[in-house]
View 1 (cartoon, rainbow over the protein chains, first blue to last red):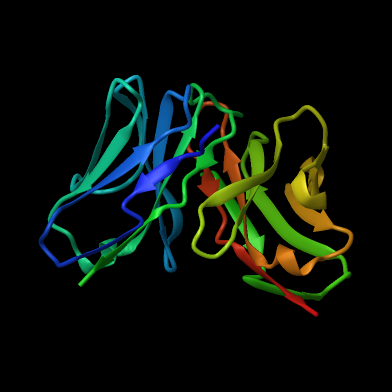
View 2: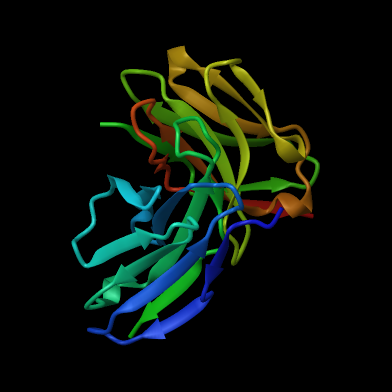
Length: 114
Length: 113
C-alpha cells in the first residue's frame, strides 16, 4: 500500500506570497492532519480534517488554512508568507482520526521563505 | 496543560552499546504515548505506542519502552545500538479527548563506530 505523499517536496517563496501544499493520504484513510516543524518551535499541530470538515485546530494565525476533498486528499494554504513560515510541513493520515490511532506521516514539504 | 519533555537534545553512544532516550510527560490523566523516529529529509516513522494495554511496549527495529506512571516516564531503549539507528527521535503524547499529538523537542542520536 502506498504511503502518504506530499507535493511539492521543496518550495521557495518570497515574503507576501501565498503557497499551497498538497497531501494524499494512505488509501482508505479519511483523516488528514498537518504539522509544522521548525528548529525553534519543534513539531506543532496545525489542523485536522475528516470527511471534508476541519475537526481540530492548533494555535496558528488565520493565514494558515486548509481543506479536504471528497477523496480525502488535503491541501494547506498559507497566505501573506512571513520569514518565520519557513519550515518543514508534515502531513499525516489515519483511518478515522480517533485517539490511539497511528498517524502515518509523509516525507514533508520544505518551505523556504526569502 | 499537557506537555512532553525529552531530556538531552543529543545522545551519543558507541555501536553495540545500550541506547536510552528519556521522555517524561506532564498530564493529570495518563495519556497515550508514542515514539517516532525521523531520518534526514524524511517524515516521521512510528516506532511504538502505549495505549494502556501493557506497560512494556515493544516496537520495530529492536526498540522498546516502558510506561511508568509513578515516574510519569516513557523512556525508549534498545540493547545494542546499530549505525543505522542514527536519527532524531521524538516522544509524543495524545489525550483521549483530542486527536492532536503533542511532541517533545526531540533527541538526536549519534552512533559512534
